[in-house]
Image 1 (spheres, one colour):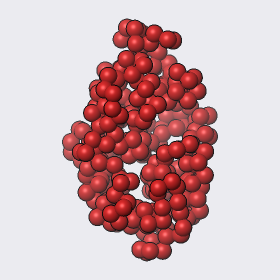
Image 2 (cartoon, rainbow, N blue to C red):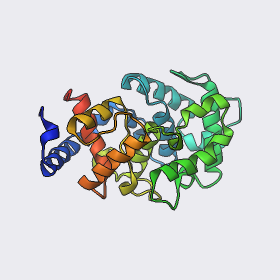
Image 3 (spheres, rainbow, N blue to C red):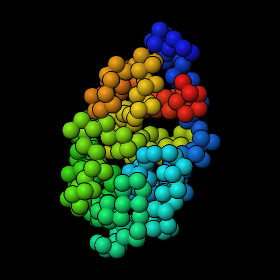
Length: 253
């Protein structure tokens, strides 16, 4: 489909709905970092593993999964118990690209604080319908426990960051557990509020389809893409992440 940007709105919706359904399948998660939190049953254990795996999700997926396996070795069979009993400075050696032991130590302390005060869902909860405000609410509670060098690993939409990894984590938590992919664990954030995790590939495919005009992959691009996807499906705009991702990874679109 070379002239996708020339499609009518209804044709584009039909095409993207088809691709979203095609790629939102459990068979595809065996090659995706989301497979790691799927090994757990307890809500809090899933949240912790998903949050940390999403945090290190940059680079090749095989490398992310390998580093994620190391995280699971550290967290053990009961991640919530590990987090709640974690003591500052006791983190085993860990490195994934620029995320290292110091960073993981801070993240574990931040998670401990969150779970001592209602949990991660409460930390992200905000009365505003804007996803930006939910992320900022979380940052306010989380970042006091971080080393200054670790702050770069917690995206800040108010400075224009596309915040891809946090948005991906929120998709995992908030979209319904349809077809065994996302978890549907949270109700504090509605699927209607979600955005598509925006990276170079997703951005390029969106522009090729004519659904994103902005050339930078930043928060304003998130808002533009979200607005279009909300026209396609007001209740579940983030489902089109599967369409864009599948077109890029499996179809070299």
